[in-house]
Image (tube, rainbow, N blue to C red; front, side, top):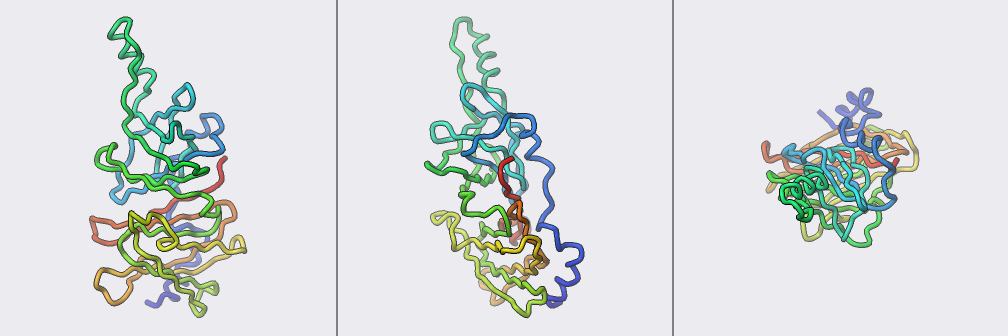
Length: 263
């Protein structure tokens, strides 16, 4: 089936839909806690294997400990690093230290070790930390991007895979005005860069754009279709789509997050 025909069949249902539906988790904790700091890090899970982190997690904020839920698709509340890092515990460190002190009369409170310690780039301002959970929490991987590099509108792609990608867009919707852009593979020493990212911001809020995202297998001559549909430009949030390798199928897949301004 031709790309234009396929997109036309999907348009009525998907014209206003993001690549993936929102997750219900990840923001409820913000309603229960005080206003998040104006700078710092928000965390979101990107897990090709669907691995998750313990929930809730505890982190240090000044002299107290607070809870946060880190889930997929919707970033967590913002956390200000302390000492150049954000540390997480899977139980309340204050209560754990008090219980430990109670076992030894007159002893000092001994803080338990964090289950996860995340170094944060210095002078980073507002950052988004993409979290890839490991089989053990301590083996979790993290990647940072500056939120200022991704306007809070439009659609963006980050290629975290080893598959070369090609993004084809059409403002008219029939691909008679196709625009193609190649998206390079991810290299850890390079990190998230202009080479492995793609953005479509647009000026007209609500505008619908047809697209086809293609990938190429190793040694293959032609690109295959990963997804073809339509997206619309939101003036309130950005749709960031991450392409990762699905080891269970030996093929790429999309994981999506929604990035908006702090509440």
